[in-house]
Image 1 (cartoon, helix red, strand yellow):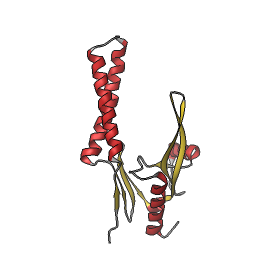
Image 2 (cartoon, helix red, strand yellow):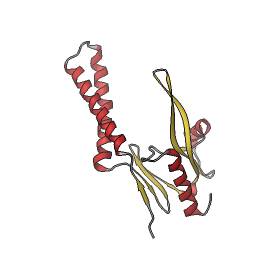
Image 3 (cartoon, one colour):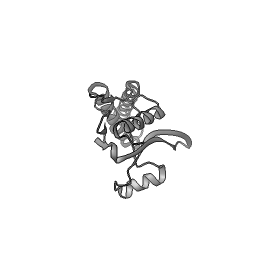
Length: 167
């Protein structure tokens, strides 16, 4: 019996990303073609590159279904811009919601993501140990796949228990 679950990121979120990216590319192109000041030229070029990557990533998800989270009997696998990653259930201790603050233009924003703690037998290296000390989790999922963060963490913990018999 194969009860594998494949979750995809929200189409609405990626549609918004595509729209924002297109606006950024067009805005940058307008500044490049009619520079008000020469110093704005390089800023506009950087905008075109940055927002161009957002357009490419959005197209990859919307039309190619590139990003996913696969939950199966062996563990979890996800694909993001940084590649495809697989984690065996026995290498993960638990999933949870990581809350942290970011600052944008001096305004504080509360953010969430689903993180997971790796088994003590896994060697984390310097960077992995640093994220655990700062945020309490070793790794983070790149998306919430259209679910509430708490629901996704609960689903993953339930599947881990189902497949391993361990909490």
